[in-house]
Length: 92
Image (cartoon, rainbow, N blue to C red; front, side, top):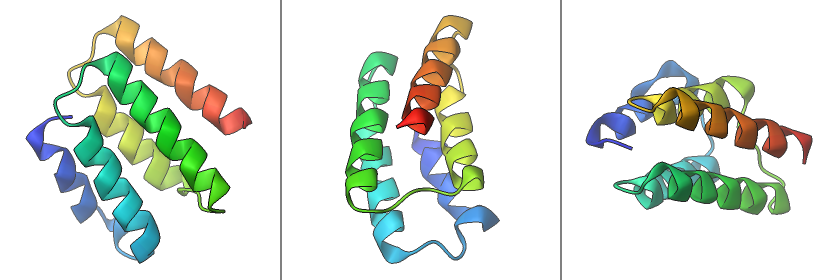
């Protein structure tokens, strides 16, 4: 994630986000910051598991914005890897 990734929080999709989900999202973005793609995917997956265990989930719009932000400046190969992980998480 680049430093501008936290600007995602200003999007209208996150205007009414619950405090718990907001904290998780901010923590996740911070944990991803400066890491290579493989580690970002691991962070995304681990937070997805934690959220499911807590009975939380991002809306489709929230999820799409997070993934689109992650895709910024990625190679086609890394974008495909990210898409694969997202599909796996949707099946969980």
